[in-house]
Length: 230
Image (cartoon, rainbow, N blue to C red; front, side, top):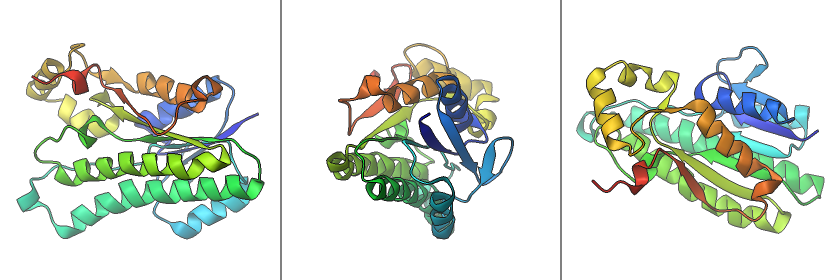
């Protein structure tokens, strides 16, 4: 049975990925800073914690990096601590996960494996009031492409998924505001907010052998948001 690490597995897109991958026959190692059923406690910024996890579970076949944070605030109102917290959790946490995964695969000495990062449509389409989040997601997309190049000699593929507005706990406050919902659904050509399992299905495809010649790509799961220049 193939095994996969899913970060941020306690809720939202991460939890949906864990569910879909289990359905597809993967052995899922779910991790989150808030542990729960079938989810281990791990702060993705904890370098030693990643080393311990690799020692415990050994090399795995797949990696999904869904752990992340997002707050709102204009650049002029954002503290240095808040800026650096986003970079540490979203970017450094993803980088540590990828490094751990690649170290495990190279130690195994067998080609193969796949990485899927969770970026955002906002990595390329900026919005005001979230510069720290936008910058961190842009970095994740760039990191994914770099990982694809470094993983290729070892048979490791790396791709990213860039969701648009998705119904998750992170988006709950925004989706409780009718004005925000009207703006979002007006911006999305398909005219609705997406659901976490819709993202998870794309993640499952990218991890699978059906995507065996796909690497270094960022796939938008956004209802057409990125195609909408209006």
